[in-house]
Image (cartoon, rainbow, N blue to C red):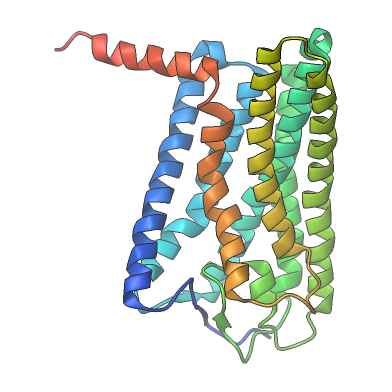
Length: 310
């Protein structure tokens, strides 16, 4: 039986000066995240040259990042300026569910994007027959569906537990592993479910990404042009950097045994990377460096500046 009416989020730091500095920092990061991802959604929507499978995946990545960051960042910003850091049980449960929906869907989508690049670089002649619109729509739909279903299963097991004594969450948002630690009864079953589904939704896409980029790396080595090699290595290297940051920190949070997992400052710092930092970096790394995107952005800006004034 659930007894607590609300949880108290302990947040990232204590002290008015530190919290004010963190507020300014994370507000800037959140605004940059929204600006970058909303720009990509708008640009891909209006520019017909970007209506391709690759940008279809990038469109959904931007949508996920907008939703994903908006689950945690606004509440974190409010709590940094407030002394009352409580959240009702219902709101906490909803946040846990919706956060995992977007997070798990993004894990699968990043794997699909790596496979898309693998086919484009290693099998360019067969690209249009493999990565067609039927493939894109079905796999992207499966990514979203996997997020909804897996989050539902994980949260059902987490919310079946009793929370009668402790209600202080040593985190800046309601995250399943941190909430489960407060359970009054045996939480081993819920922890196992988190570990299993974390393995499926984190490890499998990560293995696909690693295999895809390993094959891409071999192909790059056979490029005769030094300039072509340099550009390919730069692009793939930046992709791998942001993917490694996202998966590495998420694996650290969700796949450690409970016996070695503790809600420390280190854990919260790790959470910042996959909840706040990577949604900001994704449009900068995946989209805004592309020639097609830069060209489409210049075209859109030129239209706005040359539009007749009324």
